[in-house]
Length: 259
Ligand SMILES: Nc1ncnc2c1ncn2[C@@H]1O[C@H](COP(=O)(O)OP(=O)(O)OP(=O)(O)O)[C@@H](O)[C@H]1O
Ligand SMILES: [Mg+2]
Image (cartoon, rainbow, N blue to C red; front, side, top):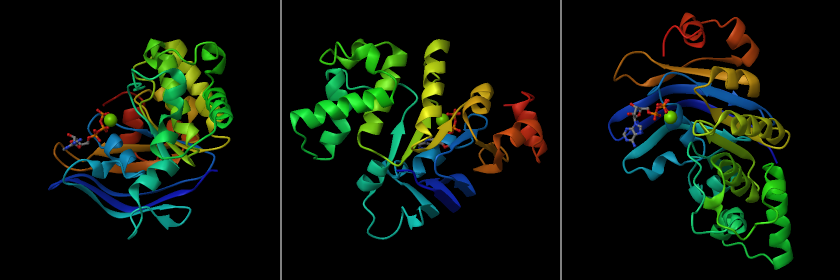
């Protein structure tokens, strides 16, 4: 249920603007990789290329290859909708469907995929996904209440439950805790630790402590100059990046000297 991601020399464009240049990296299955770097260096842009969400923006495209267990996501004939089923995404702001119940929110992705489930099968899937997102105990008595009635941290876990209900192999998270209080943040961080037992996880974060706490591997992105494309400066084990990085720019960033 978990796949290896290999990126080869990826350039990412918005029309004529090259936002990210020359990224190559590998993410092993059942690990957490954190993307860090100053605002505007292309972390969100790059993470969205890992499930072909980038190209939903008019004029946006990529050059290069992204392999999932050896298969190029951008190969001819590959269906982007299928890619997004395999590689799920959780966004910065919790975005449950406000008029849908908690239960319907969990099933939303499965329904979009056109899967038909019996009542028992959907009840099972709802429970399994909510347990997987560490939310079951808090909501099991109100599955038919609106998802929008949950706290921000609960809504974010609901979105994670929705993402895992479609049984992806990879979960991408773009600053999943930036709208959350410290207690909810810890709940999500604990959950990330559990998710990596089954999934390949990639997370963008501005919180250095969070990157250090949750990830096995850290990638530091930066801009050479204003208006230039973002680049991957350094990637390595989180322990190394935070204690003894090869690049001075990495050290300056993690110690808070810029960014
Ligand atoms: N939809 C878009 N159309 C055109 N340019 C965009 C679009 N989205 C982002 N960009 C540009 O791409 C570059 C990278 O932006 P991106 O959002 O990926 O940065 P980021 O590292 O995620 O920043 P932050 O930490 O602030 O979230 C920026 O110059 C940004 O202005
Ligand atoms: Mg971003």
